[in-house]
Amino acid sequence: MSAPPTPHSPTDAALAAAYRRGDERAATELVRRHAAALGRFLYASGGGASDIDDLVQETFFRAFRALAGWRGEASLRSWLFTIGGNLLRDEFRKAKGRKVLSLEDRDMPDHADPHADLTAAETEERLRAGLAQLPRLQREVFLLRVQEGSGYEEIAVALRTTPGAARVHYHHAVKRLKELVR
Picture: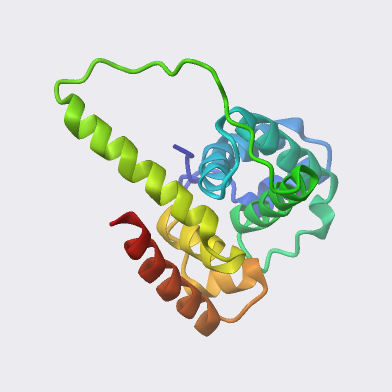
């Protein structure tokens, strides 16, 4: 789980400014704060589990190269999600819709209720498949709202839409996912 700044730690804006002045520790702190949430967002957006680390790394690489372009209208995390989402869409376009399935064995932990684990895994897979079927804006609004707890104003800035449109996209996403998960 990513760690938000504490009352005594510098803000993302202060860390970004420090990085622009050459402080590499500021970059390390920004990565520490946001990498896990970015990884969850990219995975839920359809990124392959084996690709998430590379996608997160490339997102940060691009973000740090363009940090002067972050205007601070949205949170740094939302800006990173936008960059990561664009990177993921680029990867999908390169693959032209082909999906590569891993043949690796999955480590299955020993649980007391294998039936409940199987049911949860099946529901997770239906939810993931349902997310992949949603239109891009619905999926991204849903993930920003549910995974990150972002407000509609912040979502609107990050996705270049309006708060009202973000609410509508969220409503439609929830409705569609309920249908798909049943």
